[in-house]
Image (cartoon, rainbow, N blue to C red; front, top):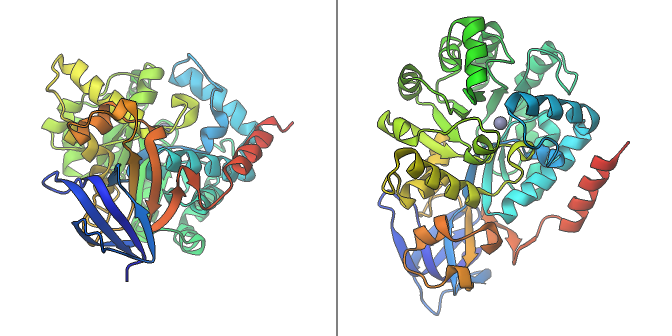
Length: 431
Ligand SMILES: [Zn+2]
């Protein structure tokens, strides 16, 4: 008998290679995998059964660029550009984002993400061990890794300490446990880490078989600064220092044709963060240019200090509308392409495309259930359009990560929501 049965799901958005939508389905989960999907049978049963009548089932959303502990910095820097933002944020980080602040912030961020239908997030933040521990405790498939700045940074770590942290990172991930994730190293950007130091990171990444997650060409001032200092674009520097292959590039708003060609040949993926890019007026990402270059575009929220929340439904809608506006063409992007970017595309970007990102037999059971019984989701014509243009995070009723029901009836089964919020407030108010 299976461990878990999602019984009689009204609609299933599978995000398989044919973008199949199914109706009235039973989905069987055994341990952490999807083992069977079939037309609903009244006799179907399992150890635990979720009645999915009037629910829409889809793959969990994959947020490919965020800074979860920065939930504690929500609202700290409003109405400033990237450079002004960084100044304000770095001061507040020095005050509260110690190791304990990172663990507390990661718990709050992971909880917000899960309640919003995100089952997997690629994070980047200080104190990676505590951040990872905090997010895994709440039940998220959480990907992060040691972060690198050339200067000491708010965590006061010297370069050699960061290198040591990177060397033992595989052991840390193993020790903490949690759902399977790829290893990553996370140089902050080409404006905070020099080409020589980036080359050093690349060597360790190869040794421990880690991928790279970084910020690239977020705004024009960054590009100008890097070009002036190194006579190359951020993407070129990453390629030359051995960091571009299979990497994940946060923002990537201002890419040249040469950058796009390099990204394609090195099989890197983009993490488009429209909420953050619009709010900081960093620029408008050109989805069409990336599509033409056959680059995998995925979606991220960025941290809560810039885009204020971790709502991937909002990100999907912003990304779709922005792509249309950019081309002055409502046909510029389809809802299927948006859903793919938020699920299967994200899985592919982290090297888990065969294991994650769609509802298919053999894949890890990371999926979410939306309650369709709401005025704003009535009537149902196209389930995918409903998700992209009408649904919101408050519609997420149940969330399964790695076969475990971590959100049930909008409540965490892993932690007490009130307690996570209380601890976060106390940390922010500390003197
Ligand atoms: Zn970022």
